[in-house]
Image (cartoon, rainbow, N blue to C red):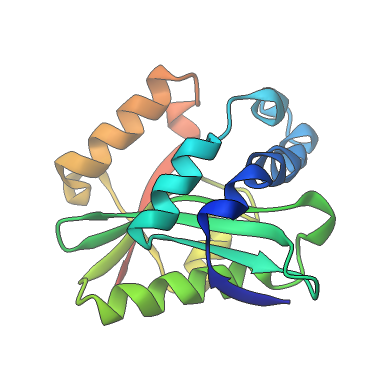
Length: 169
């Protein structure tokens, strides 16, 4: 496995990767619907590749099986999506994608990496805490992250189960 910058040509397979990654939510009571929810479109993947804010984990045939999408928000590098195909989860691909994004954020002079995620799932908040992220409280969210959480709640994600996190660089 290796990580490389995403190419626009990768976009054709990445929605299926995200769909497969979502299968893990079928194991969580009340969250199984996420496995059938909308995923990033090919157009969105191509745009991130053009912007240089997307990475893929690839196998020995250079076929993507995981990806990370980010966006630049002022001095923050925000992780929009991190997905690894269900059969490849738990083998370090997510960590490798995360490290590639953090390295890019440092090179671009960003001051922090942010994300939103589920609380109390071993592959979400707890994992990111092990990677050095801090869970933000309401007073430290800031307008941008508060709006992202509100938008997620409007989409149907249970707000009480969501949090925003920051890794200071």
